[in-house]
Image 1 (tube, rainbow, N blue to C red):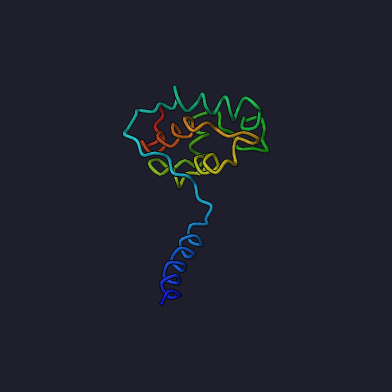
Image 2 (cartoon, helix red, strand yellow):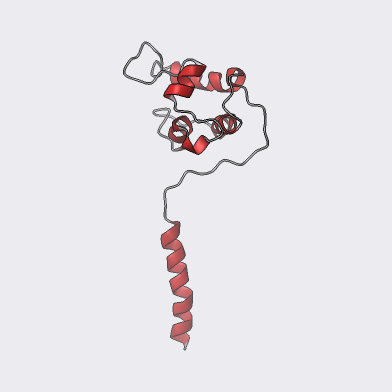
Length: 122
């Protein structure tokens, strides 16, 4: 009787531990539309973290240019209103980019919000 009670507590605990061991992206906090601007908010983040180092500029043919709005949408594979389906957000959220650094939570949230709001050229 005591064994079956312990077993009933033990099995669900182990199951929860096993199922919770996954590597997932930490979801940003859903926010109300903030009117994120590509020109004012997103372009400076990309310039400072992606272009300044020379990695994502047009003259570096080995990499994906992210210098203009068109570059970001096309090469960054941004899908308006769908940040989790957008390659740009995915590589940033997973910490793959920028190389050797991590964007601040604020910058990640701005990129998430911008894509969620339609990735406008504003």
